[in-house]
Length: 338
Image 1: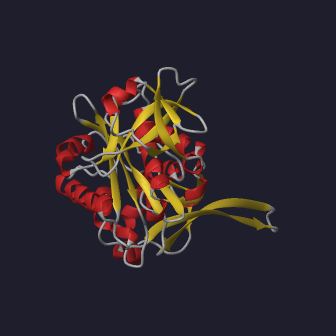
Image 2 (image 1 turned 60 degrees about the vertical axis):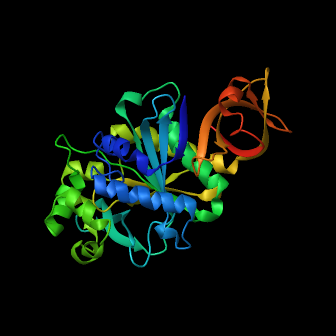
Image 3 (image 1 turned 45 degrees about the vertical axis):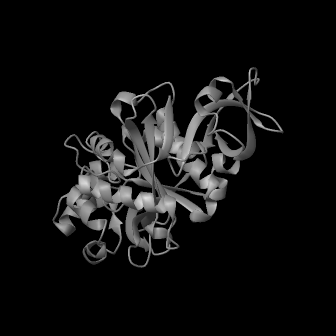
């Protein structure tokens, strides 16, 4: 059995171990940075700031029997402010035609833009390699738990939810767009620029080209990476599209990974959330999968995946859950279909 909950400082070593398994912006392989994220998250769950940009929510997927954290995901309540703008490259096309030589071309263009009143961002989704492909759909659990939390606390977030997906990297683990553009204007490694940009984005505005970048002039590998996702990210892309997210023709200025968005109220599991009394039954009827919020004295937020049958009066769970979660699954609780 696995539980979904807020991250605590006791999870630091497990998260640091996870960070070594993937190349991921939101979970850097740096213990002090991870510790800072955990402390911010703890404060956000307990007493969120009125300044949404200060609020980060980290969720853990815990193996209930070993007590090890095997997955993590994140919500940043607001990504993009006056002090720390959200930067992106707008992807568009321009048609050029010459009557003299009766020849025309359609050119892809990239242009730097910024947003100082940004949306809520979801990200930081990591599953330990040993637990990928699990029949319990652990990746989907740790992803959807963010929608459950937003369904329970919608006023803590912006009206639009944003997600940035990882592009394909080359055989050396480098981002083709960064090698073609970013490195030439910033003279640093991709990882260095990423770490610097977390606290200071001035260099992006002042060093990055602010006019159109014609993709025709870029190497083919860089062009092919713009707006695309790597193989490991394809399941995330598919999941987002199924719940209502759409590609907005914007990409990350460093690596070209695509940006997806959906209105908070239109995200399918949030739109179809339920709030019902929980009851247990020997024969609940035909069951479906739900993520169910639980009451907890130990954590600020706790949830599990359950099989349940929804009726007008209650959400009915099989008696097998009662032995483990009698007190936590008592009363009226939120759930989203999984």
